[in-house]
Length: 250
Image 1 (cartoon, rainbow, N blue to C red):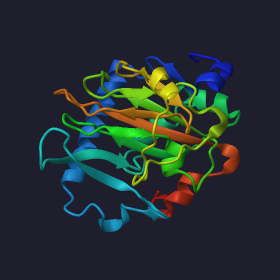
Image 2: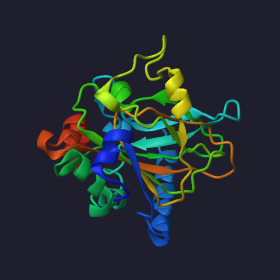
Image 3: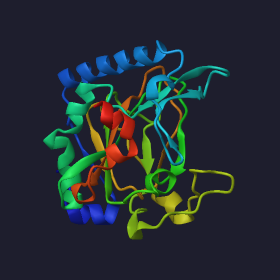
């Protein structure tokens, strides 16, 4: 592992380089293209129970407006992912990928959430937020996210930016007025912002309270990333509880 648990306590994140090699990256990129074609082939992706509502959550295929082309709609992400792809499910179970989460949580881990972010050229960024407060309040916060790049991430194509240490105290920042996700940054946060450009195959592991965001993709290349979030096994199989129809089908 790239750092120790004590470093995690201080920073709330770590970087692990080269968890995927070139051959694995090529296979996963091809699989991401297959899944994109699957989405494109479905006139109504909500059909057949693919979208599974849980309280305020609605999962499935998400389309967003392009950040650079007015009126252009593009695939932003597929969530959840593992029920559609045995390959991505196998990767989610790999010992080398789950090892940081297991160390941080001091337990075995189970998959809690999984998605594939496409961030195609022109793809929108995302506001400053904390994953737990914007998405997971109904669940445990014994969570660790493993964010694995399938393409090189740069400032031009919208790599992650974080505020190291912003997870301290597990404090949920208040949302900005009128927003369901965005939080404001204090001056100390602004001064601590770190940009994390990384190579394809690298992994960022971070706490659910860590402040992070990304800019739009202003390049001509995609910035695809797999995002696996794990919960401590002591809390049980939360994935199946969140997606009961998909779990039954699997």
